[in-house]
Structures are given as structure tokens and as C-alpha cells.
Length: 235
Image (cartoon, rainbow, N blue to C red):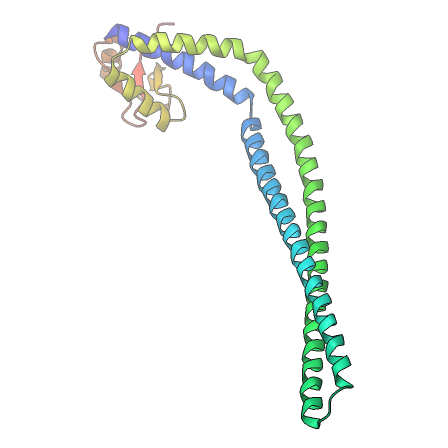
């Protein structure tokens, strides 16, 4: 059991140092992730707007074709108006002329609406592109800063990960699961040394008899208050 506790102490020391290396990176990884997500959203929106602009152009072209066809039909009706022989024919053609004028006006309004919508989309794209450019510059700065930190710590981190793997192999699965569970629940600290009669994790006082038992290292003891694994470390 002493070797188990000794290896758990080693594992905690390695994990503590790994956590310190992560802390050196600060919020940079999270900020980079947020910017990348924001950039993707904006780029997706730009692509969506460009697709809508293409549809507007297609629709406008179709409306313009319909307008030309309707104008040709209108001229035909207007020419026929001078050739009618009865009031009934005159009224019928006059109705067709009015309907065709309304149809042309409606199509022209649709053309104007596509132009207004396109202008609105173009302006939105411009704003998004400006925001995207700003975010890309910010992203480059954060990535550069993170890379510099990683260059300083990567060698040590890789060495620690190798050491961690070696130590893990020496610990029984049940103890390793217990360690990892406590570490996850207690902010990364699963193993606490007895310090001046108290738990080094939560500083709760430990009964003297229990301290004697912890010092003997015959089995794993946990703090009654915080649940961390208690160990005795010689000065």
C-alpha cells in the first residue's frame, strides 16, 4: 500500500504541474475557440446573403422579362382599341389594358423591391466583412501568443505526460478511478498531505489517532470533510 500511496503522490505532483502549464495559457484557448465560432457564424451568414443576392438577381431578370412581354401585350391591346367596332369590344379591351397596366406596375414594384433588398444585403455583407477582418486580426494575435507559450512549455508538457503514463501503469485501476474521480470533483487536487494536524486540501483538523494511521500508510484514508486522499509526506 505504501507504494500505491507513493505513486498517487507522484501522480498528483505531475498533474499539478500539468495544471500549472495549462494555467499559463490563461483564457487564450477559450478565447480562440469563441472567435473561431464567431467567425464561422459570420462567414456562413455572408455565404447565405450572397446566395440570396444571386436569387434576387435571378428574380429581377425574370420580372424584367415579364415586364417586356406585358408591355408588348399592352401595345397590342392599345393598337386593337382603335380597330374595335362595338362598345362591348371597346370595354373588353379597355379592361385588358387596365389589367395589363396594373400587372406591369406590380412587376416594376417587385423589381424595385429586389433592388432595395439587394442593397440591404450588400450593406450587411460589408459590415460583416469588416467585423470578420477585425476578428481575424484578433485571432492571429491570440494564436501567436498561445504558440509562444506552447513553445516554451511543450517539451516539459510532453515529458510530464510520458511520466504520467508510466506512473498510471503502476496503480491499480480501482485506486486510479478513485483518484481521478476526486481530482475531477476537487479542482484538480485529489491527494492532500497532512500539514500541522490538518488536511492540506481543506485544512480541516484530523484526529491524532487517524494521523498515526495515515503515517503508517497501511491503507488509503480520505478526509472526512473534503474526501481527498490523505497522505503523510516526510519533511
